[in-house]
Length: 555
Image 1: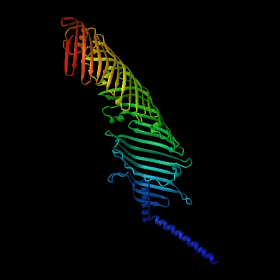
Image 2: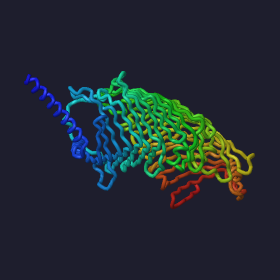
Image 3: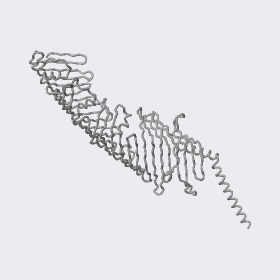
Image 4: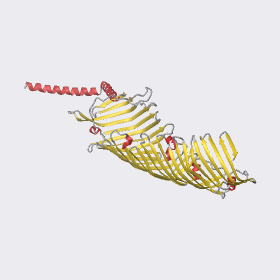
C-alpha cells in the first residue's frame, strides 16, 4: 500500500506545482515586467509589419476576459520630426476568444479604436508620408471572413489630408464606424459616417459636408445598401453591389442634386443659382490590365428647371434643361441636350473619345430664335450708339478639337432677322437680315467667311475670304439709294447735319495683312451722284489705307 501513498503524494505535488505555475503565471502576466516585455514585442512586430516607427504609451491586460488595452498609440511615417504623426489614437482595445486550445485557434471578438487621428501629407514632388512596408515573409492567406471579427468600432476619428501637389486639403471630424459579424450567414454588417468634413481646393473656400453609409459584406459580395453625402442643400445617394472580389464586378444606382449656391464660393464672380438633378446607373467590370476608366460605364440623365450665372457682368438664365449622357470604354457621349435661354432654344450633342489618353472632342449645337439683344448683353457688347438692334439668331454650329482646345476647328451657319431702331424714336425702325457662314481654325488662328451677307432696304454687304496673319478678305457693298442711307445714318447717329447726298454706289474692297496691321485697297463706283447740288453721272475712286497712311485717287 506504500506505492499508493507515493502516487498520491506525487499527484498532490503535481497539482500543487501546476497551481503554483498558474498563480505565478497569472502574477507575472499582471506584473510590470510582463507589460514592458509585451510592449517591446508589440512595437517590434508593428514596426516590422508596417515599416513605420511605432510608439505605445501604456498597456494593461485582463486574463479573465482575454482583453488588452493599448494607450496613446502613435505611428510615424516619413514625416518630419516636428510634424504630427501619421496616426495617433487614444486607446485600442483588443478582445480575443479561444476557439481551440488544442489546435491553438483564437478569434478576434472585439476591436475598439477611440479617437484615431490620421495626418496624410503629399509634397509638391508627389512624395507622401506613408511608410514603406518590408516584403512579407508570411505566405498564409488569411480570409477576413474566417477571422470572424465579431465587433469592430471606431469612434471620434479625424482625418487631416494635405496634398500640396494638386493642391487640396481635407479634414474629416467625428468619424466613426461600427461593424458586427453574423456567424449564421458569415456576413459583416456595418456603418460608416462622419459629421463634419471640409474639402478645400487651392485658394477656394472649404466645402463642408457629411457622409453616412451602411453596408454588408459576405464572402460572395459587398453590398452598399445606402450612402448619403450632404453638402448644404446638395446631396448624393448611392446604392451598389460588388461581386467576385478577385475579379470585381459592380453595379450601382445614383441620384445627385446639386444646389448651385452651395458651390458659389468656388467661383464668386459667376454667382450660380438653381438646382441640377442627375440620375443614372453605373457598372464596373474588371478586364485584365485595362485602365480603370475603360472598365467603367455610366448611363444617366440630367435636368434643371432654372439655372442662372453671371457672364460678363450680366446674369444669364437657363430654363428647362434636359439631356442624357453616357460613359463607355473611355468615351463620353452627351445626347439630346436642350434648354431655353436668351429668349430662344439651344439644343445639341457632344462626344469626347479617349478621355483618359488624348481626348478627341466633337460638339454640335443648334440655335432657334435667340434674342440678339440678350446675346449682346451676355457678351457685354454695346449697342450701336443711338440705336437698338433687336431680332433673333437662328442656325447651327459644329466644333472639333483633338487634345488641347487651342486646336479647335469650328463652323457656323447662322441667320439674322431683326430690326434696328433709334433709341428715342422706336417708330424709326429698319429691317435687318443677314447670313453668317464662318469656319475657324484655332491651330492657324484663321477665320474663313463664305457667302456672308447683311442686308437693309437701302444697302447690301457681302463678305468672303480669310482673316488671319495673311488675310485675304473681299468685301462688297451695294447702296441702291444713298439719300435713304444718309437719312438713316443721320437718324441713328449724333445730332450732326450730314451733307445732302443721293444716287447709288458700289464699293469693292480687299483687306490683306494681319489683324493687327491690315491693309485696305478699295474701289468706289457711283452713279447719278449728287453731293450738295453738285452732280456726277458717274464717279470712280480708288482708296488705299494702312494703320499709318491713307490715300485717295479719283479714277
